[in-house]
Amino acid sequence: MNSEDAGRVAAAIAAYDGKGIDSLAPVAAGIAPSPAVLQALCDFVGSEDARVQSAASWLLRRYAGAGAILSQMQTEQALAVLTIASHWEARLHVLQMMGDLILPSKRVEQLWLALIEQSKDVNKFIRAWSYHGLAVIADQHPPYRGRALSLLAAAEGEEAASVRARIRRIRVTFKWAG
Image (cartoon, rainbow, N blue to C red; front, side):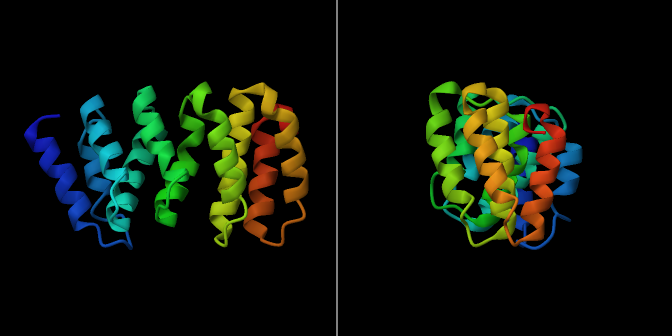
C-alpha cells in the first residue's frame, strides 16, 4: 500500500462519525483492495475503538463483496471480531461478508460455537446474520449441515421478522438447506 492509499484509508476511518458511510464510500470506490490495503483494514478491525472497528469492517465487507480475496491470516483476523468483545456493527459487517470468505478448517468449530452465541444476541440483526454465518460454515464444511438444519428449523419460530426473513433467504440460497 503506498503512503497515499494508507493516508486515505486512515483519514477515512478517522473521519467516520459512526452514523453514515458518506466518508467511507468514496474510499472504497477510489482505492483498490490490494493485499496491503486489506491487511491495514484487518489491523483496524482489531482496534479497541468501536468507531474504528465499524469503519474498517464496513470497508472490508465492501471490498470482499466486490470480489477481493483475503488471505487466510486476514480472514482469521476478520473472523476474530466474532469471538472477542467487538462493536455490534463490526460483528454485523463480518457476519454479512462470511459468504465471501474461505473459512479455515482449523477455526471452524470455534467459529461455529461463537456463532451459536451470537444467535442469542439481543440485537436482532446479529441474530439473523449469525444464522447466515452458520449456514456458510455448513455450506463450506458439509459435516455441519445436520446441525445447521436443526438450528434453522428452531429459528423459524423466532419472534423477530428479520431473523425469520434471513432463514427464508438461507433456505433459498443454500440448496442443501431448502
